[in-house]
Image (cartoon, rainbow, N blue to C red):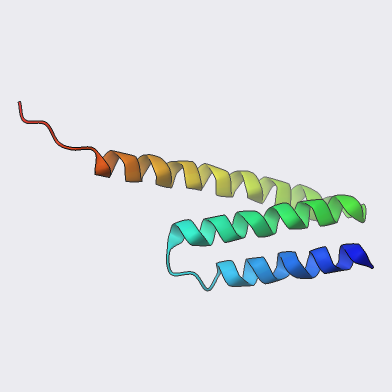
Length: 81
């Protein structure tokens, strides 16, 4: 029964992520939800749930890294030649 609450919490995080206007916030909330769902899937031996959300976690991490690199490249001061 305790694991069921983790599943509900993961669902709430995913729903919240889709209500975000900021893409970075969307990715962070979605990552948190995917991690919770991965743990939930492992806890109840639901391997497709754990596998899919584990992969989606990696996708979110990839996109967060891309966003961070893009942000850092746009914040660098331009030098004159």
